[in-house]
Image 1 (cartoon, rainbow, N blue to C red):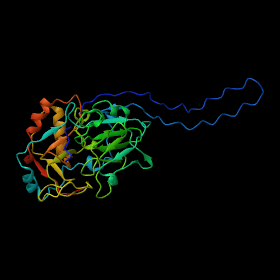
Image 2 (cartoon, one colour):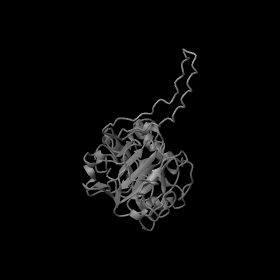
Image 3 (cartoon, rainbow, N blue to C red):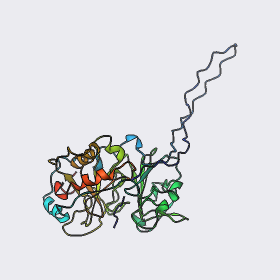
Image 4 (cartoon, one colour):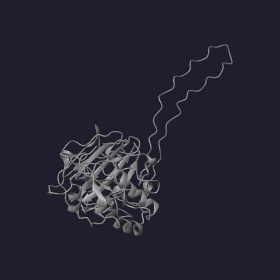
Length: 344
């Protein structure tokens, strides 16, 4: 089972940023003698700026993960309801309440932003090596900051180096190349980085995993774009679908690429649930309304096996579970409907 117990935003070590040189040619001055003026030097090609800061819980300058038409960012508020919606809801249990699977450390899934100069390190894949990415194309390795070996809150579960149990997801965004690196069951052994599986996503494209392949998530999807993040929730309505887990699943549908169960009657990986538009959200704090309105507009995508109706979010010290827990418990599975399976 990959059940996330899962976001404290802690800014890690800041490394000096490399900056581009000024490529503007100097205007030649007029000669003071009758000698011919020297030919102006052709300016060199500017070196692109490469950032170096390692930032836990990076707000990524508010940039949206994946293109606007990606499945995570797709408005499904008017999508048709699946003919088996009621049966799927009954399978989970209509009175099952939602749970925010995030909060201050150690709850939630952490993530880190790095610059393009961050060194790549090799990963030894233990469980799903034949379905894992060794790196981004020919650029082998994952840009894991050294601090993840010895400092908490870089890896899910909050233990330095990851420990030896739990999902231990490790999520890294290369801000300069706009690549997302994700590992499942990551840990530093003292000698090398190991993981159960890993995937690299080009955040400029809508490319899916190879059919039948997993990722760091059971559905073969990226994890980070489905997390509830504090910086998004306090800014406005969260503008993407949210990651949800169920205890049993049955095969998979688009946009997922991998199954994690064959329980008859259960939802498949990649299925979408949508909070009914009739649900009154006015009594909740504004930032919680922003989360719930995302459930109405973008929905929940079934991404992993775990506890039923657990909504994944980022580890962040600013979350207030005294507000989140009762608000989420006020919603039940019966407040949702299932969008037609595989709809796009």
